[in-house]
Amino acid sequence: MSLDTDTDVRVSHEVLRNGEPESLSSFSQFRDVLLPLPTRDDGYQTVLLLGTTGAGKTTVVRQLLGTKPKTERFPSTSTAKTTVADTEIITTDNDAFSSVVTFIPRDEVAELLRENACAAALAAVSGRDDNDLTRRLLDHVNQRFRFSYVLGRPPATDDDDLLDDDIEDEEEIDPDDYGFVDIRESMNVVSSAVRSLRSISADCEKEMRAHFVGFSDDPAELDDYIEENLDSYVREHNDFENIIEILIAQLEKRFDSIPVGYIRRGDDGWPITWFWETKDRADFLQKVTRFSSNHALLFGRLLTPLVNGIRVGGPFKSDWYPESLRLVLIDGEGLGHTPSSIGSLSTSTARLLDEVDRVLLVDNAKQPMQAAPVAALKEMAISGNVSKLHVVFTHFDQVRGANLRTVRDSENHVWASVENVLDSIGAELGNSARRALDDQMREHRYFVGGIDKVLRSNGRKLDIRTIGQFSSLLDELSRWGESCEGLDGVPTYKRSNLEVAIKLAAEEFHRKWKSCFGLEPLPQYPPVRWTRIKALSRTLKVGRTNTAISSR
Image 1 (cartoon, rainbow, N blue to C red):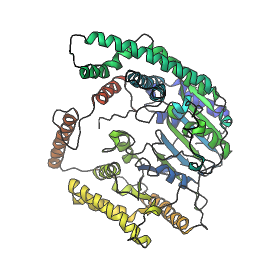
Image 2: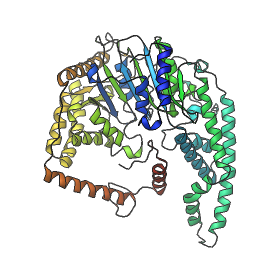
Image 3: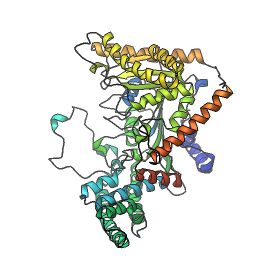
Image 4: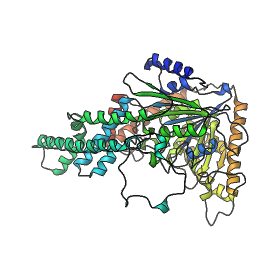
């Protein structure tokens, strides 16, 4: 879908405005109104990218799209935990670039800020300095919601700044090109909030100590009581909600500095969607950067933490691949980004495995396969989606050793580690699951290196080999689309086996949670700290979907 006129955009926004939130069950549907995802019927294949945090999943996306790492920087990457919102990228044949962004609801942002403020109050009671309180107030403990990207961070001292030798030579960024914001005002607001939280925490601590008199003379028990109950006392303080509202007002000001596009707001005035379309690639990527970047020079101007989904479409293609692409790439949060995603997939990711046409698992060739990608392989075997699997091993150029003389030796070295994983999966799920994964991965495995730089077809041997691997991957995706179009499948189950499986799954579910609660401890499910259980309870109460705590 391409919206060619301002009238088309306004009509689409009118559809959103007139529709009740209940009529659009997900933010993906909000994005569909303005920029629908093409399907197999349109000749497209949808590819879900999975991989451990820091494995290079988003860097693989950059290579497939042909975006430049130093000048365009889309999608954003760093050493770890960069992608937290769903990023959907459509490769098109037309010359227009389109983007639609959906935002986290205001009440959810407010609850996240409350959690941060309570964490800062606890730090104040523990005697931490203002820098630590500021960090806890701005950046959520699970590193998924870094409000410092929006409000800015205190300026670094000379001793705290990075050495020039540690910084790679790259294209300069001028923050003024990304809109004017008064970061000094925001820092003053944050500093005032920190002072207020110190005062609130002192009041609450005094009240709690008074209540505890007569219960115990043990100082350790008093400290435990304060730590366990400070959250509730702070939230009930008369001045607490004023701090949250002032911080939200600062966040909302950032939307006013967006120079282009159309913003649709809800009844509470909080933005729901932003849409823009242009034929200028450089201008497009610069504007979209505000919703997806993590560049330190832009802190105070970014809206990245407030985004829950971004969808872009345009004529993206690498220079080294001659054919046009008809793909939808879905790049989400890395496996293992949160503690709950290390041993199992989230419900939303598991559902996507059934919905997409292909799954691209990205893993670091330098190290043995970790628990998170192993969980992804298990889920694919259990759900019957093994035939969708492709595996890309990154950092292959760094697989070196005195015993590795050739590329084939390095490939065999990496694969030996994978075989150990497959053997463990076979012991748990049966030999049929092991054989299916082994056959699929042997046929659809790709070893790439040096992908943090622009690959040149007339460049190094590493570049030429990596280009060959990526080209084979893209060729295979295209051939798969032609051969599997229109096929339907219906699962069949043997009743006796199904009844046993349901019984075992229910027992395993209860065993896991009893262990997590500390009732019947098991080594594979260590007890969960009470603060996480409390956070899960509050999450379920307020109906939040984005959380570091998973009931899976």
